[in-house]
Image (cartoon, rainbow, N blue to C red; front, side, top):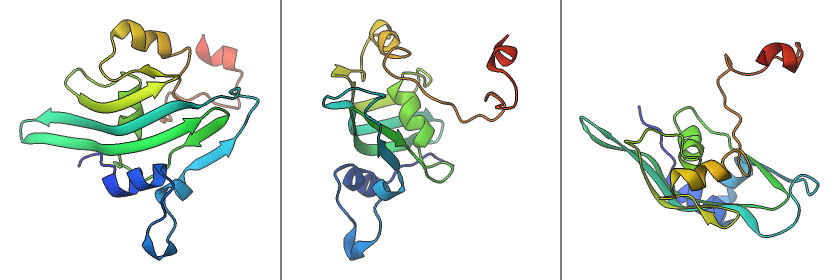
Length: 154
């Protein structure tokens, strides 16, 4: 099984285009709301352009993410939803430099104007944690809301 993001729907969604026939676009499936008090005003703080992730295998290349375009503006939150294996995690793990070294990442990913594709570990580490964070989906590593946080991280 491969992670896969459909090029046509991902690209058109990020550009605001609606598929023919008035069907909802992939953008309609994204949780996207404005929360100005969280990130103060400005231009896009996260921008992906033709973002691609490929993994080498013994059977050839696996194109896990193909041609994703998206913008997240200042004051916006973005939640990505989709089927298992659709490329959600691989996209953002690639953006944050958390994929294996064998992964080939192409295109452009900028955070606050800093290009991350091809950037040094020093640059990525400076952005990761200070400007960008990820909430992992592994239920075994998530915090339990019933218990105090301090008790769970000790």
